[in-house]
Amino acid sequence: MVSLRSTRLFCAFVISFLLAACGSDSNPNPGNGIGAGAAPTITSTIPSNNGAGVAVNVKIAATFSAQMDPGTITATTFTVKQGAAAVSGTVAYSGSTATFTPSTNLGTGAGFTATISTGAKDMAGNALAAPYGWAFATGTTSSFGPPAVSLGTAGNHVVLAKTAISSVPSSGLTGNIGLSPAAASFVTGFSLVADSTNVFSNSTQVVGKVYAANYAVPTPSNLTTAISNMESAYTDAAGRPTPDFLELGTGNIGGKTLAPGLYKWTSTVTIPSGVTIAGGANDVWIFQTSGDLSMSAATSVTLSGGAQAKNIFWQVAGQATLGANSHFEGVILSKTAITLQTGATMNGRVLAQTQVALQQATITEPAL
Image 1 (tube, helix red, strand yellow):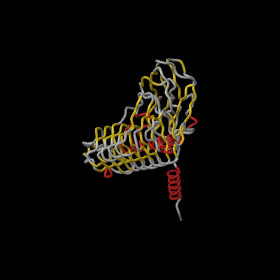
Image 2 (tube, helix red, strand yellow):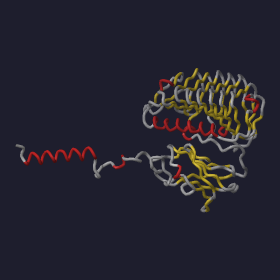
Image 3 (spheres, one colour):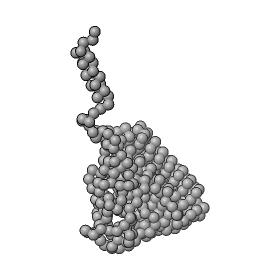
Image 4 (tube, one colour):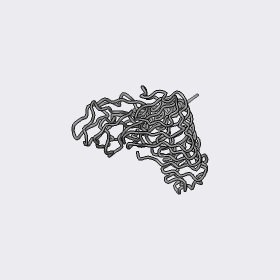
């Protein structure tokens, strides 16, 4: 016969087991439930913080480290002020970027602040840890062309790729390079020397740092964000509607002078002879192509009128190849590979969703 004491002990054991299995209201880690996680951050802004001479028709934008809940990105959580006076405008969210479009051009030679409040939350319900603000000052002129493409933390790299980065020595890079999800063993030809922290490596071919996915914290997380921002930037550039120029030169743009605007081709774009990109310092160019980008040897893309490489975006669905001893300007966002052949030079960034191959090439990053 089972004793009353044994029965009570058995019941107590069953109750304890069920409580442990099902949990209780006294969970010591309530933050591990639905919606828990790291607070999202803002990885880049347009204009940059303390930017000067900004175009009076600027669209103010911020790129987030995570996909945000569009319902929390509103004119209440994203505000712009001139002094204490609120600037009227509309707010939109696409990809990972929020954009504030003023109702009218901003005043000339004036100071402004933009703020995103903690009311902005990601899709898991995590809010910004603190309000984020940045300041800028306008110049006296407007800009022409579409709004610039926000690169987020991808813009912290002169070369960024997913599967491999190779060099035929000696190449020369000014700026950081990053590779993810591939490991450092797929960064070849650079004779890497690991830093003592194992957060990055150095190379005599790089005036900057070399990062790879298998390096020490926080590099893996930082690179994951940068790659995500690169992919979002590609999607943004590829998705811009209503081009100003459609099928210009049926893809052959050699010898042309290109004004600010959105250009679209449904074929390969070739540059068999010199091209001039002409416009002001705040003007923007976006070139969309569903094929390859191919530049002949010993040809050049040149800038005039104050145009800046940081405002020129080449979205390439295929691969981009810059010929031997050519010179190029702008940011290449390639869905596949980017190759700079022997002696090619470039002011800009190469951001590839597969690999980057450099053959005694030189790339200098532009100012953000």
